[in-house]
Image 1 (spheres, rainbow, N blue to C red):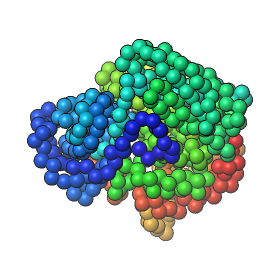
Image 2: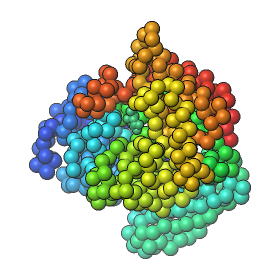
Image 3: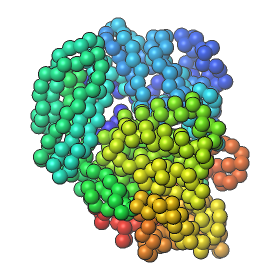
Length: 563
Ligand code: ADA
């Protein structure tokens, strides 16, 4: 997959991105498909979303993708960076993997003889019980397809399955490294770790059939990562004949006096939410689009972006690491009903998805917050155990970052005590009240959090905004005009800059316009079928509010002024 560094030097890796054979099978039941008899009558780009192309626009159903590859004998690992949103993978007709849930990396393995192999992936974008994480009422269009890159890795008997690099101490330039491995049998192999071209460790290690190796490394030359100085290091691990490279940043995230800190420096987060969507590419994020988006985040003066509402493209995270943009990364969720949240199958799927999110993204220094379950029933007693379970899982996997969720109604919320950072979505001046009500609403949220005895926790307004149909103006500056959106955001940011310092983070809803669900009640509230609360439209053209926000963010809260 397109990354900003090579992830392997020794391991044989083939990028399978390109044009695959394609067939749209529509309403078919995947269990009834004879994979060797599919009539592949079309082609499709990988990565890509078939239902964002003109020929299959808006289609829901089963689709089949096929590619033929030449392989040497041995264990083959397919690495999928994201498939929307259910799939079943076949290797020469044999089923090797099934996966539900888009936006997260998973793998499929098989042992193969040398020769040409045929890989077929059945992909389904329908909403049903096979995909408990995806629901039709979400306020975004759930595009289908092999939406992110696919790679084929050839593995030897000893394989590195995962690598975690975590800062132990910035002052002492110390990191901990955990290498997850598997080996056919118990064996002894050399372990070498190199950082920034210097060998930092060489030793023989005894491996079991699978396990983890943990080491502490001193890297006296390494410069810390911060938003102002986003210094990055590259760590190469070689274990037997396998290897894995990861990029990391030496930095510590904390919370202190109701603020998030990076390397002990308190921050005010000023930024936006961002969806990974484009009218022509669906959830696929072409490299040029990612560069565009990061440039616009920088141009706006954002030091913060919330990846709403699912795990992010690895290349976007690479670019944020380099730009020093701080990221809130969250698991998929959007107003799941209580019954959904309390279903054990759903919880199991969320835990698996969180595990995949953390495994794929944990080494990005730009990620300063893990989040879960956007706007779900954290207001209900029934929801509380789910929040406790999922936040607990995040802490278990990674105790180096604070955890949070965006609450739909801060005034009734019942789970704020479970998080490290409190976050509230609110739409004064849009879904309720008028422009003059905005300051009072922000102050009331702050007061409620303090009244709960949580005055020491940072508080982020994780969504706030207004719809603006691109180019729409009128003499009154009424709802849906660019002018109204601009005035609303001016009022919000103006209040926060005018001494409201209880709130230490803001993520405006939203960077770019994006297509919403096809559900009729939604469409009636979303002109053009688009959620148009963007500062830019879906083709990234700035609206009036872009300049307003930029004026504020680049002034007192300019990105480079932080940390
Ligand atoms: C919610 C939700 C967003 C979006 C927004 C809106 O806050 O979290 O995903 O739907 O409302 O535009 O109404």
